[in-house]
Image (cartoon, rainbow, N blue to C red; front, top):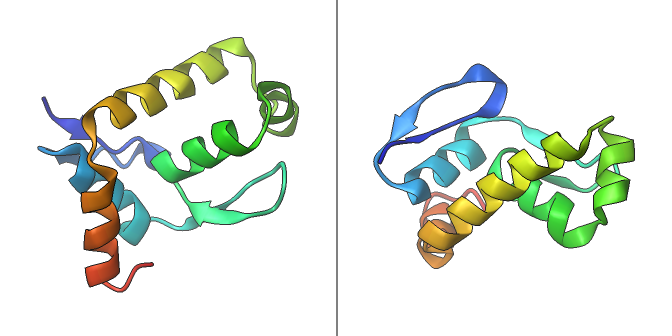
Amino acid sequence: MAWKCGIDGCGREFEAVEETIVHQTEDHERHECKVCGTIVPDGFFAIRHAFDEHRRAEFMRAYDADSSDVREREDVKEAIESEADLQVVVDRLDENGAL
């Protein structure tokens, strides 16, 4: 299964989900959370921050989102977390000086 970067229509594909997350972190601009102002890497880490740190209603208000937007991002988060070895991601980002 190929993993595709969904940031701003990037569309780059990777064989491993970990490669996709590293790409998103290193090759795309950081994202400022519209709920709390925290700066996080865009893509998976931004989704994870939004749903681990804030209530769904806060996300919907801040991003003018609806329930289908929430479900889409929850599905992405779940798919990545069920597949990814996040320690591999952290180790790669640390090696590359991106942390």
